[in-house]
Image (cartoon, rainbow over all chains, first blue to last red; front, top):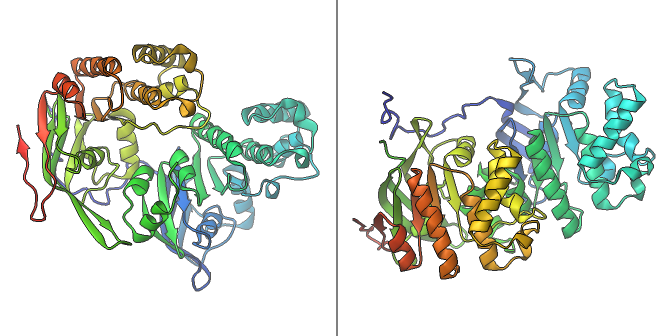
Length: 275
Length: 237
């Protein structure tokens, strides 16, 4: 018989999750100048979860995202990635440039706030999706075209538009195209910086719904930077709140939003118009 | 049979830093929930019913005490568990039905109901069958099923929400005024769902505004009173 009473009442504070993180940073800092950037960030990202980083402009959330995604270096602390294929972690701070590039191409996906930052304006929509595959060595034209069509369909872009330039697309379509280009290499971890910020509300709703669906379907892990708390509530499992370069609160998304503890989070939550 | 949920000495005070206010809402609350019973939280508004219920779901953070939830033959303290663990508990162990639907843009009503089932690995075919059964049971007109609930009336949204809450057979169900603003006929349909959940062995903690609904579902009443500055008394019947 199992002793059910055995673990009742024992302190479980700071209990670690029973699963292995896929990305972990300890005391990570990157200050461009005092008060600019972020400091002492401690974070873990787990498989299949969406982590939202929220905070006002200048709180350091985008810098943190760039560092976590190995786009920029950090000054202090550690940053480790746990590849699916290996039991040992990869220290992203002491990694060769070649290895960093190949890791970003194979395991990471980036979605920028401005879609054209992540797209090539003089390449067709299909070409934009196929390009990351070509960088990873795929050469078969039929294969590339089939993949492009598949992902256009997945992000709800009419397949007839495959040969059109992204500059002829609307903002919402461009953003969906950028997501298709990001997903085609089947990354394990996706970093998104304000993906819905520049879009109309109706277009935003469609994109959010699409992102929510893809995250569940493909079991993606996502780190999402947003200043929009309703986006964080809809998409994320956990929220990290940043203020002036520091993480001031972290926890389950609905707990952080419905019962905020830190003064800054309370201010943030109470400043939002209820819909 | 071990209890499904054991809450011990829960206390909570809201600290509103920016207004410099402290609002005590829970003081030394303890309760147990067993399989097949419905425990009703009862008391005047402002007595902390909703705060207690939200704490049981991990939606509110308590200052002290613990809430042990039976999951896979051992107890997990939701007050101190890692958020990932709380997410897992909510997927398989604790269900939540409130009177308000958080609408996901564009998602048709039937898919709103199917969603928790699909996420827990039930096939689309079975999920659709069950969703149709629940929506039918709750008198949600079939012509609404393929429409997003954002434009539905309050009562219709609420019934979609209830269908979603009862879609999975959670061992523990938390109900926050599920019949508020429903007419008697539809409230009776919800009562039937609650009775069926009790029969399959679910433990239910609920807040019910209507006395007649409460009388029909309650096995035990947990009485709450607003906290006086010195602390709070409670009756446990």
